[in-house]
Image 1 (cartoon, rainbow, N blue to C red):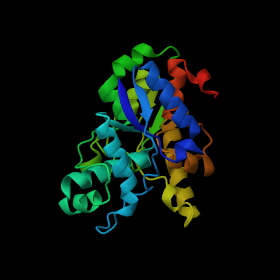
Image 2 (cartoon, helix red, strand yellow; image 1 turned 180 degrees about the horizontal axis):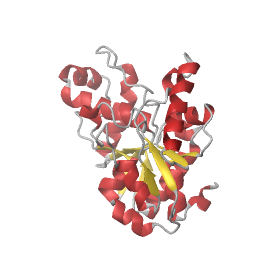
Image 3 (tube, rainbow, N blue to C red; image 1 turned 90 degrees about the horizontal axis):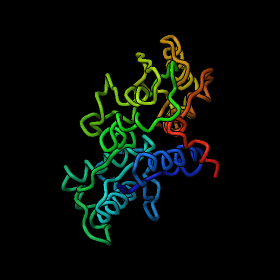
Image 4 (cartoon, rainbow, N blue to C red; image 1 turned 30 degrees about the vertical axis):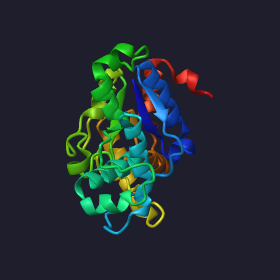
Length: 262
């Protein structure tokens, strides 16, 4: 199966491993991630300003590209996913916004037809965690792994609709499929402070440390995340257990991590 793939800026710079592991792992699972041609930054943050159009056009063009290819659109970075999913929702539900956006489109109108999946949803809904488990060759037996969701994967729930925003299970189900033991802890879906790390580093450090200490107190030996900013912030603020991308662990479990040194 082929899907349109939006990697985003960070995956081509500071988080190259997240991109490489994602592509390699998907191939093992029978899915080809076809990178969108000439994609641009998603905008980084979804602004709710009604008169703000320009920063959303890149997301709209990516969505239109996938529609023209008759493919769903898959993202990996949680920030990119949030922006693209919210933009698609706005197109579907705000006629004024959709009209303004389509005045910029040179290759036909777009009205929100594309299905948008985060990579985790792709694993759950397109592949199935049972199928993932069948492909695992290096299970993480007896490894206690904590999933860190952060803010952007789950909220706003009325738009994202990935999982229960207060009690998510999608990453824990993946951890089980890889043979490890998921650690459930209170702060797994609370903000790490990433977006205030420049303006107020003390607050960001406080938030990050609270997440790390809460995970460790629950028995975690490792934290996995889908957000490059979350990973950076947790490590920068002193995580003393490994913090890795979930796709890095998946690539190792599937036996393709050694193929990523390109």
